[in-house]
Length: 157
Ligand code: DQA
Image (cartoon, rainbow, N blue to C red; front, top):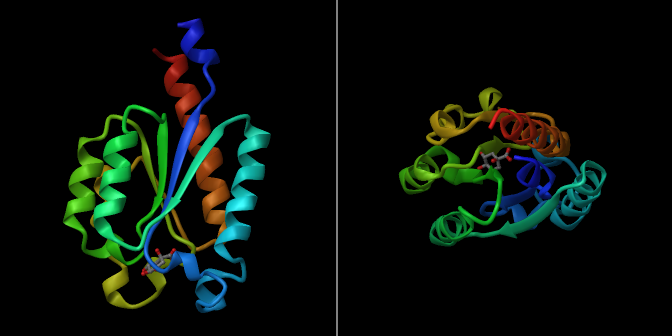
């Protein structure tokens, strides 16, 4: 439907716990950007791609779940870095499972090349793609992928 194709794509970005303190965390895994700088980079890429961003950072599980629930019909897709919750939050997994919009899992670090407990993602099964190990480029590549995915899906409707 032409009207739907022309509607500006809205993406929600959720950063999980401790990502508010990027810049203080180990640069070997997480890079040197503060969250503010990372968000500015994401907004710049979003402007280039012509999409709208809603960005949140939460240190607790419940607020992540509430943001996903409340925005489930307001945005076209989600980029989520659940941080440590990636590895054990069945509650966040259950929320992602019920969403009808694409969700992309993002990590700054390479979770597969660190401690064993980080190599398992409980949300992966319900995510459309996973980007990791490229520091801030994990987010920018994930954003570009998600926008392309949404555009192609719309084209097929
Ligand atoms: C992280 C990886 C997680 O294992 C860790 O707990 C984080 C950040 C990442 O972006 O690499 O806080 O999700």
